Image (tube, rainbow, N blue to C red; front, top):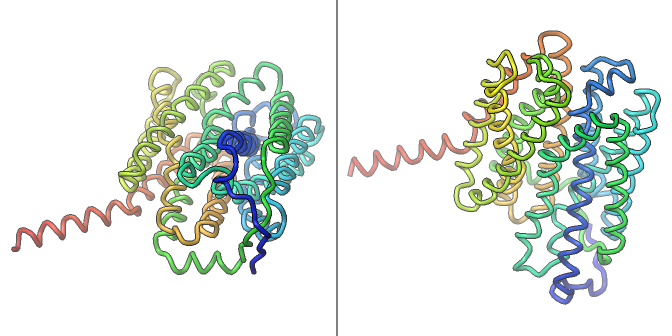
Length: 407
């Protein structure tokens, strides 16, 4: 199932400046999409209060787009496989801009969820296509840096977009925050229209490629399992970070500041992981799991806001900031021959885990205590720690050491 175009433009023949401007436009697009998906994390309390729904029900604003993105990641890629990738990306980012503006004016929670459904379609499709777009925008020797920048949009949205949106919402209301992200999506649309070159379809992904890659490569399966454990564990707790901080006596203005601290720590974690994954990928994943476990345990044991709570959030931000780049690098490293199929699986599980984490966290908050989500989250992070590739590496080193001693 292949569609070949006549003489598609080569990245090597384009101006490097234009190529990097196109990369920046795609980065802005993916930043606006991922910020849109995660924005409600910092606004659950005001949205729930204004629209008269509980915190657990308000958590559906994170669950719905996550579930939809998990399905749309491969489906949109397959369904649009014969269309110009520039046109597809522009339509998807425009859809997310319009959906956020609709949320800003919604007078009923059902309307908000309908808009969140559209955001899920955009996030899944855009991320899957944008993940490999750098190869067609810049020369081959610049592709790794361009890809890192594009995925930096995912990471920066996760660790900086949410606290910034929360800050805007606290200052001027949650509707203004949604409207601001909608305007950001429309700005990304304009930039992509002006800066992206035509990107005719070259090869389509078949749905049958996905199970084939999953069955044939045990390391891909391990990466998908780690994504499920780490991301689900994170979002079970992080979706309800605002109620957790409120229970510890942290006010709205201080919550916004702490989320901003979390975001800044996440950016540091992102760059630190980016410097390590090329040489110590497996150890980096193990370290991330340990840091997330320690941070959630520390916050769970803290009954009041203060230095310990701030330290726990900084540690948490450092750990989660390293997650997307580390897991994405693992997937690309273990399956270099079918990167599009493997990336689609990864994007699906990443977004499904966001949805499941928010949903399970909501059920826990409704039936147990808010602090319980921290214990469940750290349990899943701990499970990732003991099932990852590093125990296998340790065992292999011990066996090799015994063999050397036996000789």
